Each structure stands twice: as structure tokens, then as C-alpha cells.
Amino acid sequence: MDAAIGLSRDWMDYGSCRQWSDKFRREHPSYIGPTLWQINQDAAPILGIEARKVVEMALVICGGCMVRYDCARFAVEGRMRGGTWAMSMKQLDWLQKQPDALDLIRQAEETNTEVQVFVRDVKRARNGE
Image 1 (cartoon, rainbow, N blue to C red):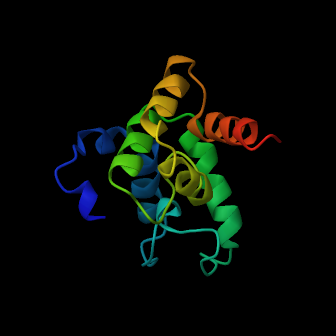
Image 2: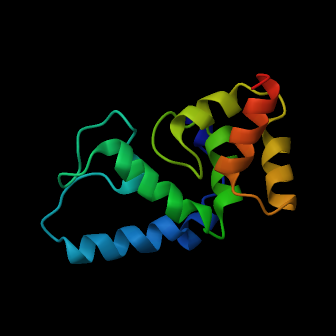
């Protein structure tokens, strides 16, 4: 995560995850733990909900977020290794290995396609699925 040092975080204040997380913490003041976006699919359940389902909920919220492309770029450039960054960690792992990762995010943005959907489709096409 040292790669994220120096990257702009100005966009984070506008993320749907920020507003949702603030609301969640107000509604569950005794909850001390990660937000939906800070866990991976193999984590322990959160408030009795299976981690895989929590990540799915986070991704639904990411899909309509106005800064989802900034988030994805940050995750690629910052080499994030955990959490949900406009896509699942599996998708991010794959995307980070692509030499044209930032170009793929740009294409998703130009076509107004959810990052997670665009990455899924490109990965399938490149793997011959």
C-alpha cells in the first residue's frame, strides 16, 4: 500500500461508501469493525452476515457511485490488496496484472459501464470464455 502514498484522495469524500458507512455507524453505534468496503469475501461474518454477501452489498452500492472510476484508478495505482474498490478483490487482482489497467478503467468510464461489469467482460474475452 506504500504505492498509495501521494495519490489524491479528494474523491473519497464523494464516495457512496463514505455516506453509507457514516449512516451505518450512526445506526449501529456499538459496532466496532470494518465497513462493507474494508473486508474480503473470505472474512468472518459481519453482524451475522456472511462476508461474501457483505461484499455483494458493497458492490451494488459501488455500481451507482459517482466516483467509482476514481476509486478503481486509486486501487490500481495504489496497489490495494484488500477491500472493495468499485470491483471485487478478485477482479482487482486480475486488473492490477494487466498492462493496460488504467486504459480499461478509462474505457469503462467512457462507456458509463460499471467497473466490475467492464472488468468481468474484458477478463472473459481475454480468457476465451
